[in-house]
Amino acid sequence: MTDLARLVSDIAAEMAACSERGTVASYIPPLARIDPRQFGLCVVLADGTVHQAGDSEQPFSIQSVSKVFALTQALGKIGDALWRRVGREPSGTPFNSIVQLEREQGIPRNPFINAGALVVADVNLAGHAPKLAIGELLRFVRYLADDETIVIDEAVARAEQETGFRNIALANYMRAFGNIRHAPELTLGVYFHQCAIAMSCRQLAMAGRFLMQGGSHGRQAARVVSPQRARRINALMLTCGHYDASGDFAFRVGLPGKSGVGGGILAIAPGKASIAVWSPGLNANGNSMLGTLALERLAEATGWSVFAPSGQA
Ligand code: DON
View 1 (tube, rainbow, N blue to C red):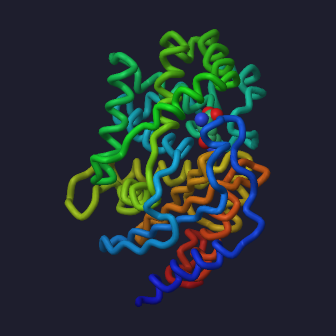
View 2: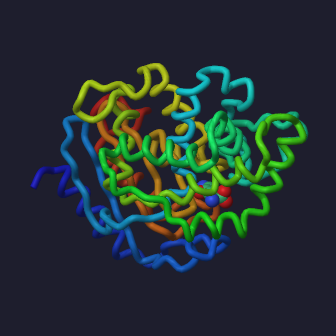
């Protein structure tokens, strides 16, 4: 067993023994039913080696982690024009907050808060029927992960629709400012379905490889985005990927990361590793409690924090 393989399995064992696991998201019924005792971790290295432990093959609802893939897709469609409709600053507010939108004329602070992700979904919808826009994103995620078995959980998508009153408010509010260009229910349909993509830690870590590798895909030379774009997406993940807990995540873990209320986190150690962790119990900020702790342990032991001199723990 290599040192890293041992570290990954030690972290999973430590997390399995934790009694304080946070609280599963309760506002979407299918998420409220998930067993909080689960924990999975997968680390994909730049050379393609995969280390995984715990429930790393168990699919879960990736929720807001999907905002990374949807953002990548929208930048591919309209490039820097996106930044006329969405900002690039941390919001300091919870993921579903509406308070800044009026003051800032319907321009969301960043693409990872829900308001920003709705604008991104609206961009991805342009020129498509909603079903095709969703299909395009799902195909993109399957391509990134090299895995055709990834699916959307329709029950979760339906539940999002039935309980998504804040998202419905956000989309309608931004429509009033002209920053949602389609009928809000169509844009919302795209957003609700992207949140309902189900992936395992292994699939998610595989899908994140292009962000570890300066924009290139897998071991082939195929390019998903330019090195500059990969760097910028990582910068947004670091500064905005955990909403009003982004500072705390940078302080504790020191890696670009994107969380979801399903309890998943995708974290990137540029040039070194793409990491996915999942534990359904959330902390007070709505981010995976043990997922964050596991990443803190991993970053500390490997010295992968982007703020550490290379290789120094
Ligand atoms: O918009 C929502 O309410 C959810 N479907 C996704 C939110 C989410 O994952 C926030 N992130 N931590």
